[in-house]
Image: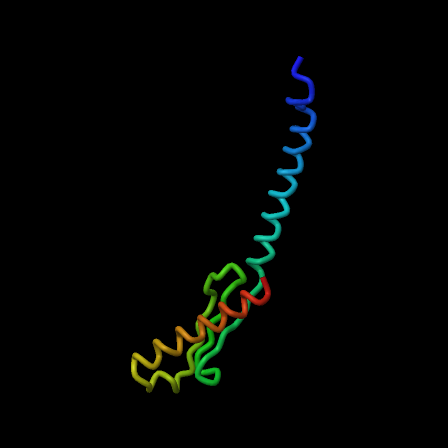
Length: 92
């Protein structure tokens, strides 16, 4: 009656393909969560480790840098985060 306009068999195949793509995306997200990248600033005085999904995992601060002002420490942390973010962008 409707001819090929409502090809339900094709729709079923499309749904299967969509499910497969969704499963592949979920697996890719799981793999990205396992990848860790470390950004540094202040010649390694501040290190920030993030996942490829941009979640911070660790911040390491050399005790010597704590003698600096609050503003210097804040700038170094921000720079290390930016370094890590740039590294993530190059791998993903």
